[in-house]
Length: 230
Image (cartoon, rainbow, N blue to C red; front, top):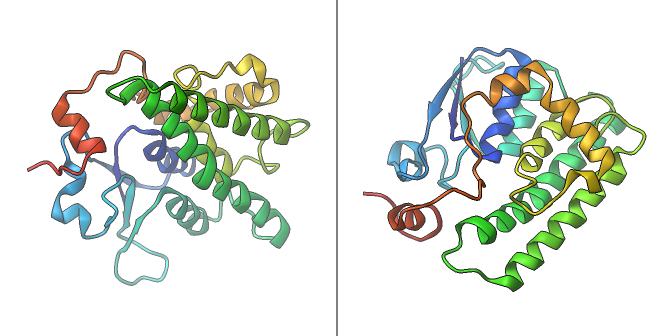
């Protein structure tokens, strides 16, 4: 049994996509980040960065104590190795996938996240920040669009690299991006959106970066300040 400690953010949805694709027996444990549940001591015991997602595998392959993981990229790699799916075993193909997984973790996610923050969540409009992160998101979309020219998925077959990148392109409109400007990315995006596992993963998920999203001051402090919820 896998326990996925989760909230419906792009990073949270990455391992949820993987669990739906593989059919691994799992249980979703909601962690309401707007209420500060990510600061609870029992969560911090295995997710010290107070971020979702986190995972506990109660039945690891080595038969030992439960495996506890935080960081979405590490979780995706772990699940791929556990199941033998969505991560090739030959050297070159494996690192094709891994480099694009790291590209998402180090680039697309943080830049699109800052884009969404300054567009949707910041208490005041900062044109420099909005322009800076909108342009960088567009640059990264361009990198991905070029990569997808002539190939169905990022590293050939559908992989954890695609599962990592897709949730960060779902809020493209809120991030000031038009997929018509990126035809190869749009084709890839639409193909993943239609996968049954994707549709299952997104049932009931609200758009984290919807322009209508409003936060109370307490929620803002919990999410973006230094104030843990009591």
